[in-house]
Length: 109
Length: 112
Image 1 (cartoon, rainbow over the protein chains, first blue to last red):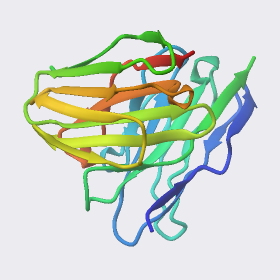
Image 2: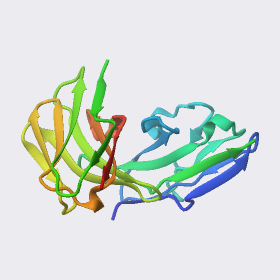
Image 3: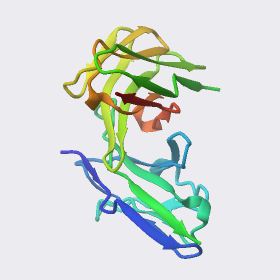
Image 4: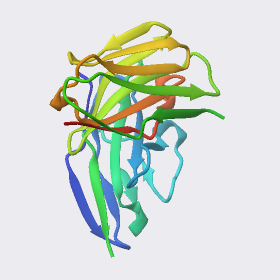
């Protein structure tokens, strides 16, 4: 079964510290993976896609097929990074994304 | 460029009243359209999706229905709201799932 797991509901780190938001997936094939972010009072928006291999707002995510993970990382957290983060998977077999439950990231000053 | 509009932003409705939330997309044709409910601490729940006019797929049994009367219009409805229908509803569109989704700004529905 296709599944996305974000094991942390809440992650709190200090400003300037490294951040890693965990995402593990279950999928028999080559998935396309995404990270979405929702800042306070803003709409849910795409942060980055695995296939693009971009770095957005200092965040990167590497697909590890061996560990079936797509963790989101940033070396130095900023207060404006506080938001809700969702990991999602496209199984390419239908029209849907499979979503993780989300992780709330709080950056403490 | 493509834009997605969703309204109203907030809505307070009494139990038993009807519901109609509207979503429109501009700047694209034949988009895939989606209705999600977002619950605090519980992530995103897909309610309906549509790959074309008049084509609606429902993901969960519920008190809600969806319709797509035009290519870029997606409507979420209910004949009689329940308290449990309260929540945050998101519309989204996609030109293909590998490109991800673009979300609307959401509707906060409170049923009283």
